[in-house]
Length: 116
Length: 113
Image (cartoon, rainbow over all chains, first blue to last red; front, side, top):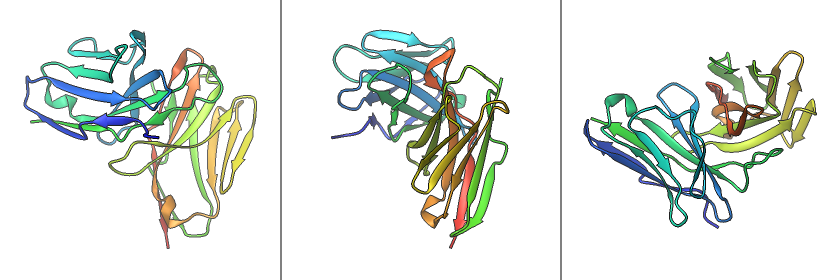
């Protein structure tokens, strides 16, 4: 009964490279959310996805960032041409549904991205 | 636009005493309020929640109070234990933010033995 699995746990990229962060939701969960935590700040919502659909990407930077949740396989958060300001902890959460009442989110342990 | 504010960056209490963590919000459309606990290098862990139709929810040592008119909620931990030392985040959901959580900045709780 694995929880939300994120990999890698730590990722170091040079400026200009691409970063790919993976998230496998809990079994039975079909909704995935990505959050970013900059140093000394709270978590900020980035994007909400269901299988093959982006539901809400209001928190995604307009350029260089993209996310997908294909029919098969994990959700991927992709950052192209990384800059130092992208250094942060990226957390993925999943839930069995996106509908109201008890938002049963489960978070993964995060991927710590360092851009050098 | 900071919709959720946790004005105390840190709180220090003695073991066995009560810890009170506060959270203020501005979006009256939030309909569910969650508290998460986070240890360093780990993801947030769900602690307790409350629906906007209630004013109190209790789970063991943890109680959350909601004052909708003041747009204020608080988390009470009693008795506090050293293992409670962590960062606590208030995270409302609902309304136009449907499907996502809006996190406060967090409060670092330290419980001294």
